[in-house]
Image (cartoon, rainbow, N blue to C red):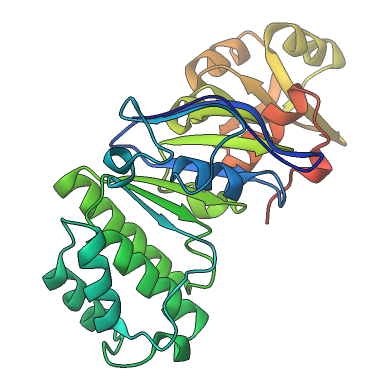
Amino acid sequence: MITLTNVSKRFDDVWAVNNVSLTMQEGNVFGLIGTNGAGKTTLLRMVAGIMKPDGGHVLIDDKPVFDNENAIKDVYFIPDEPFFFRNANGKDMEKYLKTIYEKFDSNAFYEYLEKFSLDKNRKISTFSKGMQKQMAIICGLCANTKYLICDETFDGLDPVMRQGIKAIFANHMEERGLTPIIASHNLRELEDICDTVGLLHKGGVILSKDLLDMKCNIQKIQCVFATEEEENKAMQKLAVLQKEKRGMLCTMTARGSKEEIQTAFTTLDTVFYEVLPLSLEEIFISETEVVGYDIKKLIFS
């Protein structure tokens, strides 16, 4: 388990990360989401032991991570822009990483290179951006660390490759207990892979919740009420987070299970109603509006 307690990091007069506390459970996929400049990369670099926090504590399995070889050996960090040695090819990276990670799987490394059609003898600097991302992911997976920290890992990959990488992550989680931590500004990208999601904004955490719990406890309702009085009754009965009305059609997001919402509507006079699933983006829009953040700055593409 990775635990951050009151972690802060400042660059000159700017707090990149400000008093952040998070828990990342092992065996789950943790998604870190935020706008550009929210502090995601700085936070991940502190988790990976690359950067020392100015305040607070970062622990990996109860061990301080910064300048601690016993903790760092369990972590592999894939940055947004992967680094490879100048003129290095796949064979060079394999030889180097074997000296750093005692569990590095060379056989799996070359098997992945073949499956991904990456020439082990070709200079990595001549690869496309997407191919370099693939190489970085292969290196990270074959290091066989317990935690794999990914900063915008799927950026630059085509849709087919993205799904393939997600499937490989799932296999490693099942077979050896891998715990991926994935940062992205793209909510849709993470929706089908994350167990827990944290939302970072201006260096602070707005939310950190189990994704399934969020989806089960907030609902989208489209309905037409028979009268305005019935609409007012609904607003009293339901824990409404958002409401929008176009003509007679009323669209709401409300806190509660699907069964609770349906039970409430059986007592209301409506022309029709339906309870719909929300996307992760819609959930966060609703949640962040409740805590008073400007939603126009928190819409992710």
